[in-house]
Amino acid sequence: MKILVINCGSSSLKYQLIDMDDESVIAKGLCERIGIAGSKLTHQPAGKDKVEIEKDMPTHQTAIELVMEALQDPGHGVIKNTDEISAIGHRVLHGGKVYSDSIIVNDDVKKVIRECFDLGPLHNPANLMGIEACEAAMPGKPNVAVWDTGFGMAMPEKAYMYAIPHEYYEKYSIRRYGFHGTSHMFVSGEAIKFGGLDPKNAKVIVCHLGNGASVSASIGGKCVDTSMGLTPLEGLIMGTRSGDIDPAVVQFICNKEGKDVNEVLNILNKKSGVLGMSGGVSSDFRDIEAAKKEGNHLAEVALEAFIYRVAKYIGAYTAAMNGVDAIAFTAGVGENDKVGRKAICSYLGYLGVKIDDEANDVRGKKAVISAADSKVKVMLIPTNEELAIARETLALVQ
Ligand code: AMP
Image 1 (cartoon, rainbow, N blue to C red):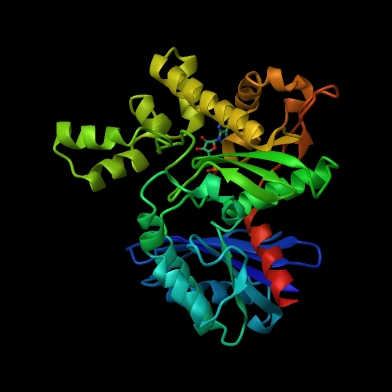
Image 2: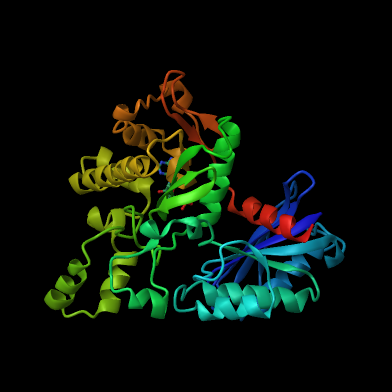
């Protein structure tokens, strides 16, 4: 059975066609600059050369049409016709308070995605456009919504409620939701399998450390807490996002700089994190590390602060679960940066965490990186959100 996975951003569309018999990727690609001049489709069929198609894509609808043409092309295509595609799985950012489990899209589901435009202003409109474009291009095929907030919806009230007047939860659904849900679900599940842990009771902390970064705690694959909140701004220090700060900082900057709240939130989302802390060096952790090596003090502090906050969250989540069996690192930094992993774990000696330097000398593949006598298993588990979405889709349409 072949499943098409679609991940729509406001001006982009990523796709993968996955053969669920062996979970192999048959083709994948990216539409860029949708609705902007100079749009381009990059299509990569497995085992064949990459193709770049420059063509106007004024809407997500035209982007999907172009993707369907590429998939069926006699030269670089991988299927004869769309009958070969059994279902389409969509990453949808926000399901609000309504949805946690993945679901086959119908009019009610689309209504909720629309009602959550406020909560996911950049992503939910694009996600809905992607779904409607697939409905138009492949009438009658099941479309499945997989929520990025889904994993965090299992958090107990004490973890998801903000200490603000309750009326705002009632009126506007303001609570902590958590994001990167598909990644946390996938990596915690894989960590349990790979580490040979008890699937019902294993206490797992997943550190998703990429440009966006978040930590989750789960017991038996069920989320207990996660670091992002109402929006992906809360929690860890990220490439460009501040993570946790005293909200009074917003008011202070507004008053001092004559800016409004929206402008300051834009600064916290796009100009802060290691980019802001380093005095503008870069949002890319490799550049920050290089600057640190050249003696840039602000870059060194940014890196240390990033690592320190991850370690603090691990400590907090260990307390929340009264223990931890495994810690899994994933995403760009988590999968590639052995120095960063070791630095984070150096805070965790009190938990009996011991890293094996040789085992930690690994990139982008599943590995146990802790020593044999470490009290907690530390692992590298590459994330695969597309495969997680495809598995969720398969489970609903089979
Ligand atoms: P992601 O958002 O998961 O794609 O992660 C992207 C980030 O991973 C980039 O911004 C880099 O900062 C980071 N990254 C990738 N490779 C390395 C590496 N070898 N060392 C440190 N950071 C890395």
